[in-house]
Image 1 (cartoon, rainbow over the protein chains, first blue to last red):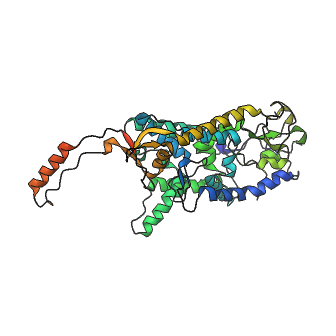
Image 2 (image 1 turned 60 degrees about the vertical axis):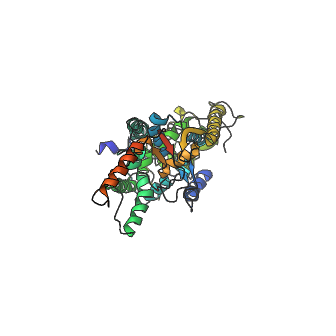
Image 3 (image 1 turned 45 degrees about the vertical axis):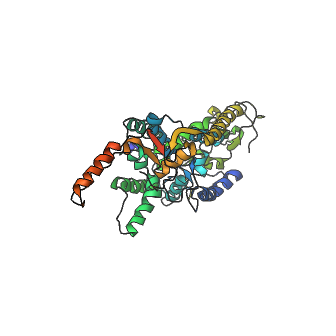
Length: 303
Length: 121
């Protein structure tokens, strides 16, 4: 077990380099932007736009959720497919649009569940590293729990909300944002705790894991993050390596809490576009524009 | 707050700049915008409880509010509780009539746009 989480070939990195001005500002702004986006996803009156799938991982059963959870909508469509044959045009459109524009930038800057994990991660300083293959589990969750299993059970005539095993019944975001408020409400009304033992256990395990692993849900299980990360390789907003700026200090990789080998490639599926790596100055946020040079050009204007 | 983690050395000579073409991302974004726009106005093949055709936004809203009704959930009326009935024979006759008149619905799934179940699962 200890070997599973060991960092590979550690050598000291040059931490004496001062952070780049843009990267430093982005790092300072990010928590405030994340907090600001809570005002979008947690609409005070709640459930305004439940007919529209959002682009972040946020339970639609939360009393304050403004948009529908894209993962829940996807699983519902999968369960409905054998019965009604409906395709989720709106959901696919929203995900294509957001993904092609910014890749997984919503994970790093807008997702409320990611923000919560960031906050929990600040409580403890020491973190357990994860091997890179754990990122593939997200695609197993996406294919198995979100698409194939609901479809099979839907084919057997079981509606999604009656399925004993589904992403919604195992989701820690659902447990935290819907199960917990409704259970507390039920408890106060004298009707007891209504959240299942399994879901309560998942929530507690997840909260404990977030203290010692940076963004455990995002890195290992989030099907939405996995899906959006597929766009990282061709999204208009991207990160660019500026070789002349690199002094091989390894600050970029040291700053990445997601375990991405930033010194090798940054626009990969493990990246959540938090832009912490831009602190080094050699990794720059950039926007692909029609006037830009071809992809292999060494110098491009950056934003 | 930030703790540098020891890492292997950087080899910038092997590193690609990772710049990219505009048009592939733009084409996908455009397709996404078109799909989202069409999806917002799309009418599904499902009906609503009030006899209209459900739009895609109504269907998505139904997912989060327990608004999907399946035909096999529309069962014939259950038999009356004879212990509680004042006239058991009459209650049985009424139930038999209701059962005989029961017709399975012609729809497989329909949308109740007014459903408000806070957490369907």
